[in-house]
Length: 323
Image 1 (cartoon, rainbow, N blue to C red):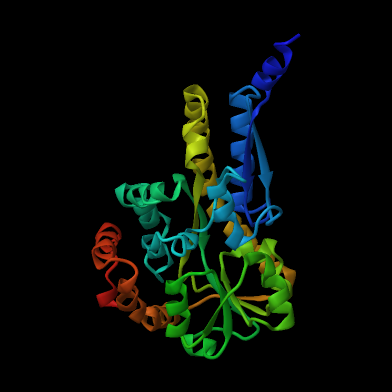
Image 2: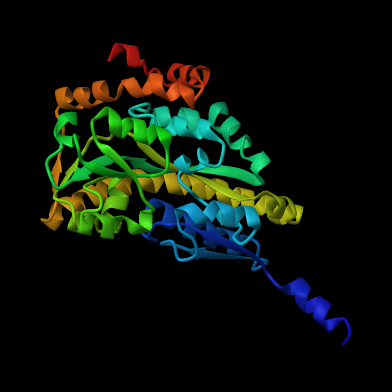
């Protein structure tokens, strides 16, 4: 009987609390559930993954500290979150129009540049496991944003990112940093005038109810890094860690495969809602947005090393000088 408590403890599953700030029916939410399913099945119950969506546990600004303290074991924050943490090279992903499509993007996230960036988190007690796509962002407001001039003077919600601030100022807008969970009410009450979001976030958070227009600017990328508390992950039994690494690899493929379709479906759902008009841009209009944001590349070199930018431009074939 003396050994019973020890036996019971040994049989207790390893709990991984996976916290995120978006809805379960977004690409990230679906991928988190997919990882939970694979992890629990393949470890035969030795691991239990508790997924907490919609900022149930922590808001944007709180979750990274909670991970470092070990209050939560896994997160998938947007890449913009790592700049304030001290890994400002991640703000590379906030540069406007730096990726023309998913293929160009994946050359970076799935190649040596992306993996090198994840390594920069080690010193923060954080281990980067993977990049998950959400998609390309569109602008929204209660007025039609067909040209950059239309955004002048508007208070636009952004994540905490100096480069996103530069981007908004480049088009004459006023950047407003706000937690994702607070955006709907801020739009409803006029605290902010507009947003930038992939359609899946725009639709699942019901922003279309409080915004009259969504313009398909596709001006920037929003993605996530799946990260874990480093001491926790490295302390897992080797066989469990190997199984979870494989589950994460497959969940990443799943996340990226659903992201594109979810955003296409969400755009159509916003259109069908009848509450928010979806505006497509002509090639000339899109070029005007690109040109308006070009000054950001030079200004951003104070945060993102020029050598890193050039490395990305070379890999993707993007040349801002030719705009």
